[in-house]
Length: 131
Image (cartoon, rainbow, N blue to C red; front, side, top):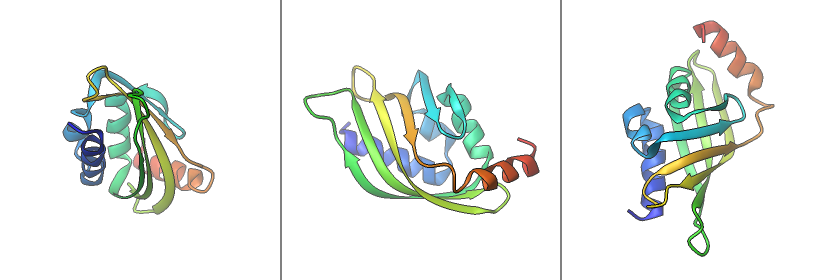
């Protein structure tokens, strides 16, 4: 599968809140490094993310494809995230994915964005939902 298609499937599954579809794109031992959630296995990260989300909408801005068959790809997108308590937050982020050797699945994700503008809303939403 072309990397651009893998990336588009990821954003579509994220928008749909489809845990199974998102996890199908990752290797079983994949990890996620997130500014809000810390370092977690992908399965745990996405379960928590979707529990903290009432709606997600992404708008792809750029896809950074690897040079010389490097084992990574990056997505730059706007993330319009509605927290579980209904509070909307919006920000630009970059997701850097490391690829498995077959280049068909993500083996690691590092998420990069500034959490300062949304950290208080995120904490309030998690406290309200008991997460």
